[in-house]
Image (cartoon, rainbow, N blue to C red):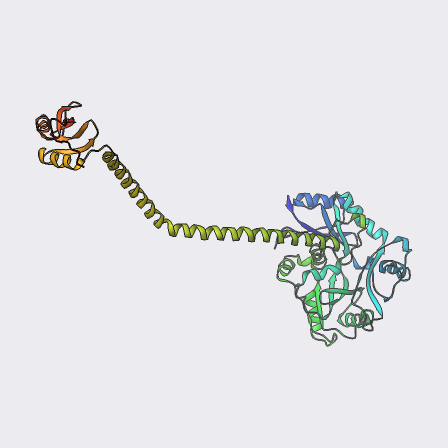
Length: 453
């Protein structure tokens, strides 16, 4: 199923449907000459896979009365109530049978009255298309005058000027009077040639309150032929051209079938009409729920508040991140200095440990220097000492020598040592004897004391 925006134009029992299925894609079909148009419409939508629960409906202009009313500036009660009261004087059917909608236009030049554009039709003109959609298991999205949706095909940034839009469809001619993109009035006219049509336009100007107009647009069936017919005559008093469609709309208009261009163009305009439309004849209980102006303002305030809260939170996070980034940069800059300080601290700790050991030896009243001097002189040059420890009981040497057994006699002859012996078995390591020898201090009677004070 394809999501689509569908416009339905109804004209003399003929259903023309245009479904927008993409930016530049549309589906078009016509339902006519069938006993059950609702079933035929539903079957066509299902066969084409068009998924749309709501369909926009455009009524033929001849079914609707469109009129501009002048109301007093000061109105007792609501403006809508005044419009309903004035409507009784302008419709040819009982007021209770009327279905109408209105929109306020720009005030009159004298500023003493209010101008209102009103569209009204009989109840049965509304109930018939609604019953058709109900039978086709669809719901209405809006119910408008089809030709009033034509400005939806124009660019949004359109200069404000008085324009007459002539639209031909199925032998009928609709005149739409625009101020920029805003419809001011519309008429259904009958004209056999260009002169008759120009006369109808001139006859309609007092109804709009215009003395002249600045442009004329012509669209629909046989538009090229009518443009040629007007081209050789100076009847309109304003430039005549095709409507200046917006770029996306021009692509869609070009995709419409030439044989039913006028009616299909109305259906396309209905499908692309504004949400909500300016004049919607759909009963209030059937209209899709839309946010009111007050609700939009409230929602906007909530969104602004949330955005401000997020902005404050983001600013705080951003400032914190910048502070942490600066702190990290400063730490990296000081990292080398910190490592140098750690190295100095480690060296200081080692020197303190060595100093503590020397102080411990000194506290034991052992003078190591004379002993070290004698060991240096006594031991052969090929001896390599790995460790030397002195205590109250004697000296312990660990190292390597060519012949470890020769070291015992040498140590026995030392001035300060006696009773030299191996404390662990001698092992061979890379053609050297690995030894560990312990020797005791000589007694004071046998040798001079190494304590020098």
